Image (tube, rainbow, N blue to C red; front, side, top):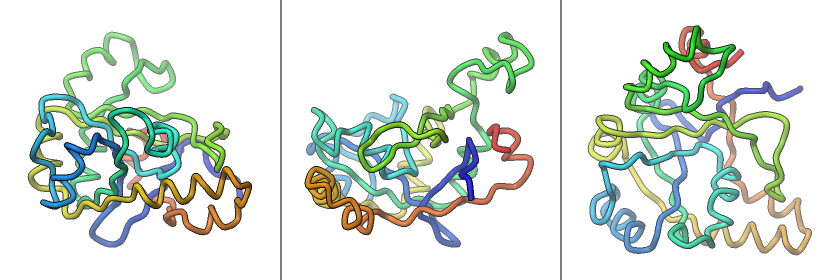
Length: 197
């Protein structure tokens, strides 16, 4: 079955969704220890969360880029995840989504930004379908830190292990280690808001 052009795929259960972020050790260490973001985390800056593990690997270079050496799996409430989606606007003007450039600019007061970027394969090459990136700012960032986050796990070792298997061309073993991400069902109104068909 063909993957839709825009589709949220994530690891989730009835109450939570797992998203990924990468930070420097001085931010990641306290976050893992405390189970929430506190020391060093700048709430006044937009922070991007990604439900796709492989897209996070692409963004962080398998957890090797400066300032992104520690990859975190953040468990957050589904209620918070969907609040973020509902209170979002696109980062860029898209004629098929927005009535006009002016209406899109007016929507930028929303606390959440959405980007649909090419999903990545095991070699981090772009695929033909998209993966969602969610930027949280202002109220959304504070809610993420104080209310939505329920657990934080360091998955840097997993990232490095998968990367080494990919380098060794052992793709089947590498793929078997990936977090299982399933299509995330959206109410029709929210799907329309996000450009999901």
